[in-house]
Each structure stands twice: as C-alpha cells, then as structure tokens.
Image 1 (cartoon, helix red, strand yellow):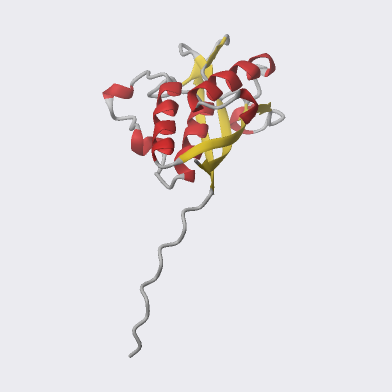
Image 2 (image 1 turned 90 degrees about the horizontal axis):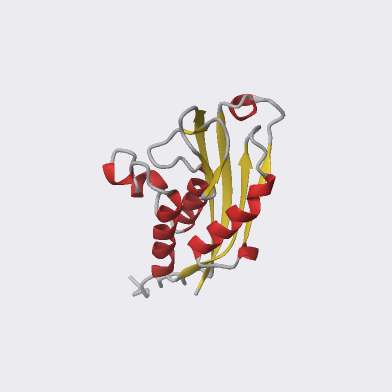
Length: 171
C-alpha cells in the first residue's frame, strides 16, 4: 500500500455568487416598505418583520453566496425580537457575517415584481439605502422594477415579489 499525501484543502474562492427571492402578500393596514423606502400606497406587505421583500431577497442572496442558509434560519418569524423589525437592520447584520468571513459585496442586481404602485421614482433611494447597509457605493447596487402584465399574484395586486443576485469578492 502506497502512502499517499492527504488531500490538500481546496483554496478559498475569490468570488462567490448568491441568489435570493421573496414574496409578500399585499394587505390593507400595513406600510409598503421596499429596499428600506416607505412608499405611499393603500396596501402594504404582510410579514413578521416590516415585510420588505426586496431587502429580504438581497439578504438571502448574501446568505446563499456564503452557504449560510436563509433569512428564516437567522431571523425566524417565531422570534418576538424580529416582530416589526426594519429589514435593513437585518441586512446590515448579514453583511457583518459576510465581512467576518473575508468577503465584501462586489455588486447587487435586484428586480422588484409588482403591478402597482409604480416605483420608478423610488428606485434611486432604494439603491442608496441598500448600498449604505452593505457599506458599498451606490454604483454597486442596481434595483429595477417590472410588472407581470396583470398575470398571477403580483399582476393581480395581491403580492409583491423580488429577486436578487449578488457577487461577493474575497477581501
């Protein structure tokens, strides 16, 4: 029997990619907060936290890139401490986890999916707030919005959805 050297530890990757997706029902009597921005509208998102589907999708993208599970594992909807919490605060906490593991956000690309309200004028503010939470410049964060042409839960005005992709770089 030959003595073979132990398997070497694989090198730490320079880049990590993650995706996130979230959807929240739209209901009366709640605020509509997306990307940390409160948007005037007759309905808001239902959720244990503030229901910010965009920030949740970005948070899940970061957690996924680092193989750290998802937002529900870190901030369960059964925990009283997260009831009504501003989701940007949760994103900041996840960004600290990312940085403590030696990575930084290279860029975020996110899409909001909703029929109404029109959110174009709020997108720059969302990018600024997300960039601040991630300790990056605003040109590293892209937020777009689209409709589903009246189809499905988002098209019928019953929900808002968001998806996000992140690229992390080793620092």
